[in-house]
Image (cartoon, rainbow over all chains, first blue to last red; front, side):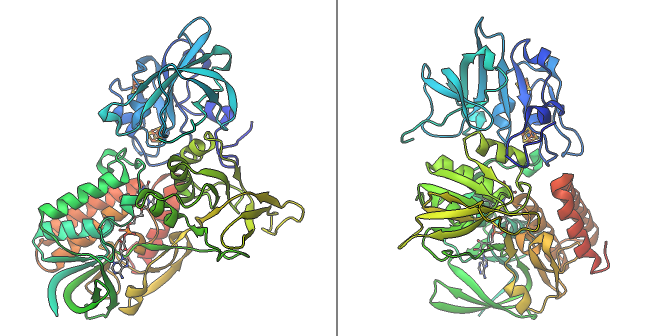
Amino acid sequence: MTDTLKTLGYPSLDELKSTPGYPGEDIQKKGPVAIIECIEEIPCNPCETSCPAGAIKVGDPITNLPRLIANKCRGCGRCVAACPGLAIYIKDYTYSAEKALITFPYEYFPLPQKGDRVIAVNRRGKPVCEGEIMEVKLLGSYNKTPLVSMAYPREFFEEVVSIKRLEGEG
Amino acid sequence: MIKTEIAVIGGGPAGLCAAIEGTKAGAKVLVIDENSKPGGQLFKQIHKFFGSREHQAGVRGFQIGEKLLEQSRELEIEVWLNSEVCGLDSDKNLWVVRDKKESIKVIAERVIIATGAVENSIYFPGWDLPGVMGAGAAQTMININRVLPGKKVLMVGSGNVGVIVSYQLLQAGAEVVAVVDAAPKLGGYGVHTAKVCRAGVPFYTSHTILKAWGSECVEGAVIVRLDNSWNPVTGSEKFLDVDTICIATGLTPLSELAWMAGCKFEFIPELGGHVPLHDRFMETTVSGIYVAGDISGIEEASTAMDEGRIAGVNAAASLGYIDDDKRKKMTEKLWKRLNSLRCGPFGEKRKSSKDRLLTFRGEA
Ligand SMILES: Cc1cc2nc3c(=O)[nH]c(=O)nc-3n(C[C@H](O)[C@H](O)[C@H](O)COP(=O)(O)OP(=O)(O)OC[C@H]3O[C@@H](n4cnc5c(N)ncnc54)[C@H](O)[C@@H]3O)c2cc1C
Ligand code: SF4
Ligand code: SF4
């Protein structure tokens, strides 16, 4: 068992898999689902209050870890934008025969554009593979946190969490 | 000379909330802040806050600040800006310097001190070079003045301030070369470190800065690993090509005015150092002088706001604007909210320190 959150800064798969917000492999591979990487008991619950489907439970006390009720999750993305920790994303293993889709929060300028080829990175920020931007969405209710959707090779399904920041002026 | 019922020193989240509650109750309140805009630290906080809905979780700090200002305007609260309180005595006489030229005496019936905190500094060869600055100062530069302090930054300290400012430096277009912490474990919330980490920033625990150098300003830094007894390990030095060094090694309550007024203090390291003793109603050992926010122990804006509300309600009540029953109910409700924030592994420590502070007044 390797714990890396408090030494290297990112949660290891072992750490994630022992928490109630990180869905099991079978669920992750079934279709679009929220994946919650929030493994410390902090006083916070916008994930719970933002979900229209009641698919995230924090409850009382507010420091409980968020629990995903996977069969209720519709993959709508509201929790992704609402989470102040930027700790939730949505992954869809079934996006196409070869590609998975990830929708993640991205608060950097410049924003990627639809069709851009970008570098997908892992939890340490290390390049993993190439990805293609499928959508960039910013609704008023997201309160200035854009959501970026990227298609990338399925073989890197679990590893990829974001993209390398783009160069240039915002 | 000017008279007021409640003088609030400091217009940050704690002071503004205190003023809002005091005014709502019917008291005449004067807020005095040294800056050109009220809001304290809030306008630097461009990130979304944690907490619950009633603590405005998911709302960005500056947006919370805007709401407080709007409320203050609606209530027509008098706010003196560019005004520094330089003296306070136990009879609640304030000496205020306005616009750096005019000296005014304010006589208040109640005083709420909500002066916040100052950043701690650490000392190493080269610490006085331009380019070495507090993380809070860097945050003011990027988020208020929109000036990048440098292109390549070393962050010293991995508490929430260190990691949040690192993230915001990245957002502002700088490169964060490393975040170091002398402790063997990172201090900030894991969700914050994780988002900085996936931007490619390396974290070094059990590491500190050995020195900085440069002729006119910072041109580089050396970090070093620490052994179990926190001594530098020879041979583990690492050179970092940086032009800016941000220090995020904690905050200390800004408590001079409380000392001056004769308030009793207790030294509680978990709360940032010397903290004025206060009771559940935020009243200090000097009758009629209250404290709220970071000055009463370093915490967060969300707790500062609730403490401010408690101080405002109770100062107004002591002037007869709120009856005792209502005062107790309002206070208890706010305490419940405070306690909900002060739980979990991060909050427990603060809660037990805060509770300890109350025991000194015989009120645990
Ligand atoms: C980088 C960073 C990130 C943070 N993130 C969060 C977060 O996500 N969530 C959260 O809840 N909190 C956060 N905080 C903490 C939060 O900002 C503080 O806890 C909060 O601002 C404290 O409020 P306050 O009113 O006590 O003090 P302040 O906001 O510091 O306000 C005090 C005011 O008093 C004025 N003042 C001081 N002395 C005098 C004097 N003698 N005369 C006149 N005026 C005076 C000061 O200029 C200032 O305007 C963060 C802090 C930092 C630095
Ligand atoms: S993606 Fe939508 S349905 Fe699923 S947990 Fe998040 S908010 Fe709820
Ligand atoms: S909103 Fe995000 S940071 Fe807050 S509890 Fe939920 S997952 Fe964790």
